[in-house]
Image (cartoon, rainbow, N blue to C red; front, side, top):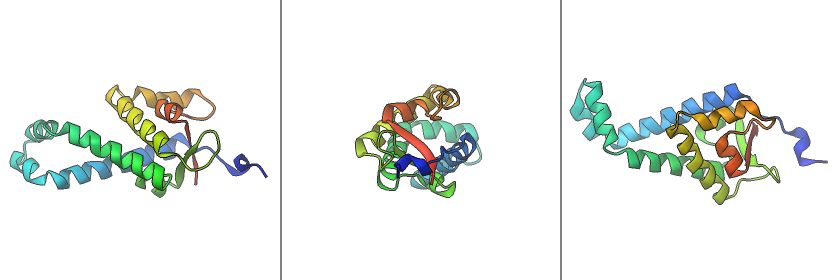
Amino acid sequence: MNKSENLELASIRSRAFAFVIDDFLVTLIVILIYWDKIAIAGDDVMSALIIMNDFILQVLFLKFLYQSFFVWYYGATVGKIVTKIKVIDFYNFGKVSITSAMLRSIFRIVSEMFFYIGFIFAFFNDGRQTFHDKLGRTLVVNA
């Protein structure tokens, strides 16, 4: 029996919903970690954004750790677990290596920084692979 026989690519919709869940979760973690600094801004949203820009590198590092660890260890982030999808190795349809998970995470962040352009790749290939999926050598499938 072929490992790929029971695989079904995750829909763009479920991937987008997982993305929203993950970004919300990371944002919540950042707010909790830096609450004492954010609270200084009070009701002024612009001041809060300026304060958050002061620790943008920490936010990017947290995103990198979150994506890398969960994809490598569990095969899915919390958002992907909720939406019942997972990340697998493109070549052997198995667990993603730590190197692939880290590459995928880095280029996911790069895609986000450049107007999410790397995510658009998923609409134009048979594997629904984003830019970070291609470089990380991964596929996203239904769990």
